[in-house]
Image (cartoon, rainbow, N blue to C red; front, side, top):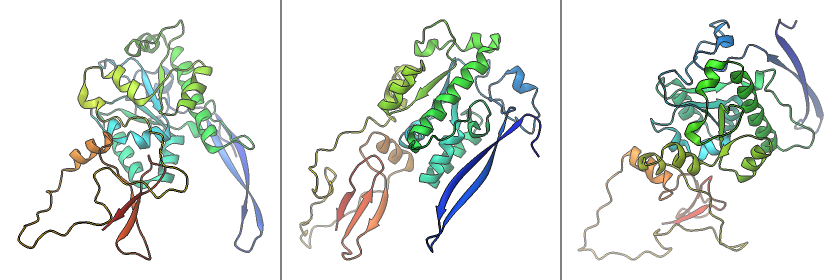
Length: 314
């Protein structure tokens, strides 16, 4: 049975078992019309049941922010230190983003959920995968990234249409903070470090910023916030087939032995906040350590922002 205000979408996919048999699996995906936007003062969402829309925290009247921000999954993973700063508020995390982050890193998923649970941050999860007017299905032969981009664009379009119908909220969402001009109100901007995604957004008449441009525009003159932004990825200079890259200042393969009379002292442990700042400035890298099975003095660190692993000797 389908409830009032709901629709059903059947999703089919094939899966191969261990014995080589092919199974065709069908799943029912339900879409609702009563998904809350999370904006304070939204009249249509205020009429919804409190159990469905318990939190309306975005863009409170006392806030100076006049535009919402939607972020995509790759940028959320790279800019997690920037998002955790107290000044970064009124961010929409789509369900598509949360599912992708959970698939890649459970640690980052928990850190994002802590931001959602913090009332001062005003981070809101928009259930776009169950919203009837914001859901997009994956096309045949379409990559997961392209489908996720279309899902983000559909969520932005839904917010623009949903909030522009309310003059009181549309009057506050002028986008003057980002210098947005145009006859139609822009209630949402996209934060993405992918140049292709920004180009696609511009083709759909949507506003998109890179992380560094977003921080310099919204937090102009606040170096404490802009320093947390991870810069654009650099093109690798190693030739194909070359050994994995080594960090500047790392110990060489052969280390000199100190004389017995020279004392050696390890550096003091740094605070977690200082390490996160250095990671955001790309002075330190964070990744998963993979030990080499045939050599106990060799290991690799897989860093998401680097195309090749970092080799460690010693």
